[in-house]
Image (cartoon, rainbow, N blue to C red; front, side, top):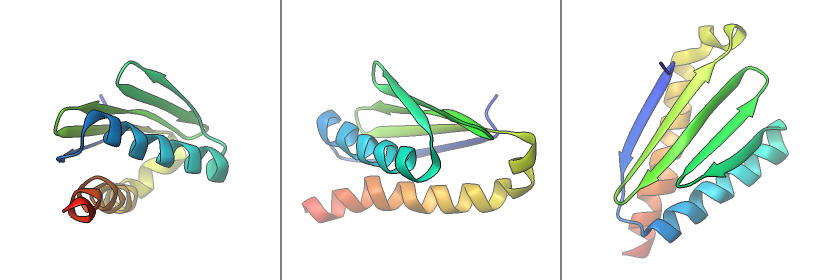
Length: 98
């Protein structure tokens, strides 16, 4: 079971949603030395201290994060920040298209 699960609805096409997820993965890989790989429509990521998946489907994105022991104390702060970023990227992208 994941320590953090976030779900957002969006109106992006699958291609657009995948492009957004790829941008985030590239930036996180550069900033945090995270590794990632696509497994179908899910992006699996891992770094020392956390791992998880970002699963894409039509109209919905789900992020599951597993935190290592040292990060568990920051769970609520991480969840708040990641949730805000996720809404901005997936729902904000919807608003920019309109």
